[in-house]
Length: 386
Image (spheres, rainbow, N blue to C red):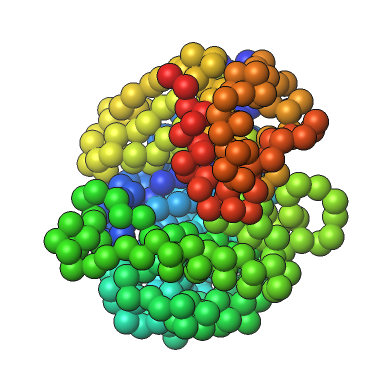
């Protein structure tokens, strides 16, 4: 039995996709009806194993393409969650592909308490969608958005990508203009990253495409300015949310689940390849759906590895994550969370960032500047002490 306070965040990885996108390095595989049914049964078993230690305030179903699960699959998962008292979260997000949204599915999710949808738009340009390997059309984006609104979803996120090979500034501006006009509550926008073992990385290695760093910087600046004019507040490198005007570092429509990650909170990770962090111990499930199912069918969780970081290394990791947020790290909050003084343990690193104009430090907090946010990954590496 669990005796400590229950964990309040749950991540569920759904590994299935209709087709692998050219940029994707996440664990996913082509959908198969038989394996999907087996996965759903295994996921319910894994939920049963941890349910007594969960009182979810935030839930996030990511992928892969969670919306690829059919109505019967979703009914099985949602009924199990209701039985295990895992529903009723303050924020419950499900990622969707515009090509796999239906009125019936949207209504089912909403009826069980899902209240936030993150839709993978990536682009509204048909040629770029094809280049990225996306299965949806621009028309399906608008259609699916309307379906979700009619189902009662009033907290929608739209995912975009920039610096896509072949994407001009004019195309990027057009996409931003059209997406802003849709009036979602949240906007996420990521620069294309060339991960090994992806089709895009292969094309880059072969010289078929080239990286234009200056254009990528200009696109990021355009994103910041356009989002701000439209009433979105940036609260993390790639995330922008509407705000009801209440005071605080985090806008009211921010993704609470992700904020928990960036502030180093605990969470359970269920499903193939899912990572979790519970009471200082990091876990990772096997990145193999068949193996995942076999382990659960045999009565054990499908955990491949466990790791507990030394205090200073964990503190550095927390510093790195937290600096992705516009609010940076309040110094007192960081010390209370980790036991370390950010200014002492990382004095040289902080000065290096400040001298480049990428960071600012006052009596209350250390944060990255607008220019520094563009290089948040580089800054983060400075804090990752072994």
